[in-house]
Length: 372
Figure 1: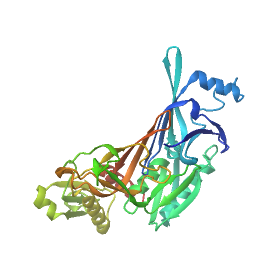
Figure 2: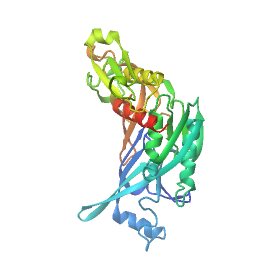
Figure 3: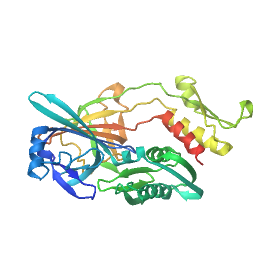
Figure 4: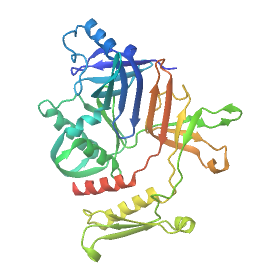
């Protein structure tokens, strides 16, 4: 069983209070290249007693306010999550009043920030992203405390022209480009960029219902096996009119033999170079040529050490107890972690693997081409 702290942090980057003892219904999530979420509930009367004890008797929002304060989560003495307070929801349960506190990760800071910047010469994609953050920091009231973090791996070179571009989308669209980076924000607001985020944990095996006589550590699982979204012949259309448009195609012959021919037409209006269009078309085919399965597993308490395992990491999954599940046996990359923590800090962890939203990837490729 883990031990949690829920800390309120001020704008000057210092901890104001640990409120774990008055919190319930703690739930947090992490998503690869997305914003974290954090939700918990406090009893209003107990919280106001805390305010009085800390000297905020006449300042109801002096300790914690939406948009201003951050909440950082410690697990077993180590910070694992940093978020900004986004919303208070007041709910009556006569005679008590609860406050549902909803928080989002630091990426969400940049949903209301816009930049106009030009990178005319080929620039490393990490440097583009860092300079965008620094441009935000330089504006009046715009410094959220985010600073350059580490860069891991080789970075693609890009040219970009942004005009009033929303920054959160800019960061995520860069990550969805071909060769785009993974990224995260640490609890202490370092912005890290990776060629590929994550570590392979060969010693971690998640299994159901049992293995070698030992009960499984997976409590439940679900996944859908479907041809929805599958295509084994992709036609790529670039810029131009009618038959004069740049065109490309990519084909997966084995898939056509197995589940018939399934076609998809993809348009990138801003792509004028044949080699770029070929690259995009082949990339889409590679993503959608096989039958899609995205497993989600809920684990028993204490199975994963969430101080060591993170989104982007790869673990082993074995659901091979039945004939139709025998192929779910191998290494899977973690896309999302959701953790529900009870009042005793017991954890129910749900892990989702290898998420794929091809339409979003295509849309982001198109937007990236428009910004070249």
